[in-house]
Length: 88
Image 1 (tube, rainbow, N blue to C red):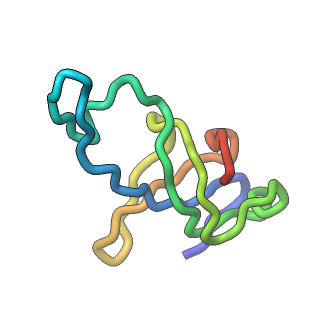
Image 2 (tube, rainbow, N blue to C red; image 1 turned 180 degrees about the horizontal axis):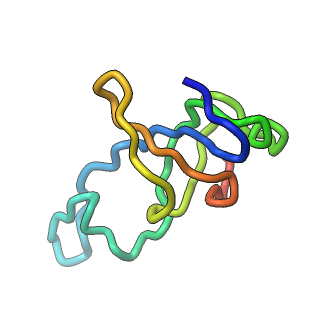
């Protein structure tokens, strides 16, 4: 599987539940206050590799960006290079 152009294929990392100050447990999908999500790069297009991204890089991206795709029963996300805000 190979991304094309300025596209990046990523796999989101599972965050699990978090506990608030009041003791409530919030699921990953209920964290409306967090805009960016951590992921691992699976494939970059030609332009992505020029930006310093490579397979295995850890990135933060806008959680509302891109689309989900399913390949061999695995869920991946396809985002644009411009949606990446931090490379770790």
